[in-house]
Amino acid sequence: MPKLDAITLSVLQAALQQVCDEMDLTFSRAAFSPVIAEANDRSDGIYSAVDGSLIAQGSQGLPVFVGVMQYSTKTVIEMIADGRCLAPEPGDIYIVNDPYLGGTHLMDVRFAMPVYRDGKIFCWLSNTGHWPDIGGSVPGGFSASATAVEQEGLRLPPVKLFKKGVLDAEIYAIICSNIRVADQRIGDIRAQAAALLIGQDRLNGILDRYGDETVVEAIAELRRRAAEQMRANIAAIPDGTYHSKAFVDSDGVVNEPLTIALAVEKQGDTLTFDFAGSSRPCTGPMNSVLATTLSSVYLAMRHIFPDVPISAGAFEPLIVKRPEGTFLDAKYPRPVSGCAAEVSQRIAEAVFAAMVQALPDKVTAAPAGSSGNFALGGNDPARGRDYVMYQISGGGYGGNSGHDGLTNGCSTIGISKSPPVEIMEQAFPVLYRHYALREGSGGAGKHRGGFGLAYEVEILRGDARASFVMDHGRFGPQGALGGKDGEPNSVTVFRGGVEHVPPHLSKEQDIPLKAGDRVRVGTPGGGGYGDPLERDANLVLRDVALGYYTSEEASEKFGVVLSAGGLTIDRKATDRQRAG
Image 1 (cartoon, rainbow, N blue to C red):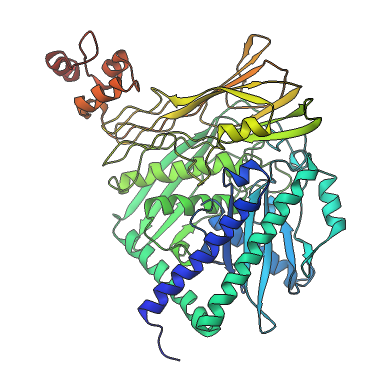
Image 2 (image 1 turned 90 degrees about the vertical axis):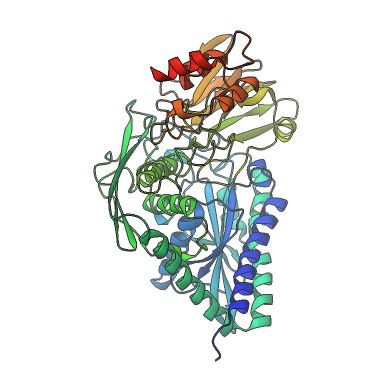
């Protein structure tokens, strides 16, 4: 066989990426739930038939699923091999959401389907979609006070949901009997399966055109080159060990912070990540399963080196020591509803805080680092039906060596966006009374952090229950190299005109609400980068003119004194203030 030429390799790389992108698009276009159809809380990919390792993933899929789906696919392959799963046949699609089998939280439901060529499995296609409810003690599954995984919802090992292309009515009935608003799940299930079928069709088209052997050769070469490129990037980092810490507000049950302690050792062309010294397994739902912990490290390095093509090869130079005995290696039955959406982002923050010491020109200060999980479940008397609403929200990104942080960006782990207000008000009995940037929330720095989001939701009719699993309420996102922390998350509930702030600040469950009650949320701003007193005074003046900071904050945070009207800079007073 002739050696694969560079042009064909490039074409096949783009083609495999396009297969995944079309799966992503199909999934969102066909799904019923706003969290998938509008917020794009989903991902699709192609995985090795041998060990489930990542071949390609959609560019619009959640980064946190990069590592997770390869581990869950590997688990399916291994369970089939040792007889714990029924052997596959063409048209079969497995469903699994067990966190301890290469997963995240229970609401992230994964499908896996083998693709056959000449009677043999060529590869697996897998996807994940966030279902708005999976049962459990609270609507939406985000139980802030869970002490065992069973309280969080229905846990599914790998089983065939589709057999030879036909939905298994019995398994589907079991699922529907354990979740809320079950009649709407068929739309998401069909959409998730349709995405895999589209992927199979597009992949077969590529294989028919270029030949199976050529595509197999391309996959191997792309993996080799990804590993080589990542090693080259790592080799440029100064040798040494870089330490950092990040903190989770609490586990939702015990009102004390959890510590993520990280040491990153750079030696040659590899990085070793050691989380020894992190907090022990916790009582509440902020434990992280191993697959999520690994994926969190991978996605953080993807943020730092986005030029490296995505495949399992990109992860080969990243050695993560298993954090046994800590809350970052959860074992059954530890609750885990906060692992993917919140703890994963604290892990990524620890990686950023360590690597910014080694790569100050490439790494940002800490981003908002919270998905802002807000679940609301109740009954809409006007429509005569129950509902489960799931709201995610963005926040500020950290400043970096070149510019200010992004304002109201998506979470560190995702590409997901907040569902449009109009869609939420149409689907659920709520009114958004306020939805705007959270001025002043960006951490001060030579390059300030981006701003978070401020919104307020009112219940229009019926009774409801609200639950929150957020983070960064006790500690704001970390500044870097002299930059200040961003503003922390805030949650306030107004019930009958009385203000209620959750004791755990960012976490609480089952708060009863009635028509007229309101929930107000302020998401974190990003951390600042560099000394705030070195910020260009003209940029501070611009920020004040735009309403991002007040004149008083300009003086307090940046040492910039403005005229009485706030329209000009008092240069002499500014020089005195900055001189100390």
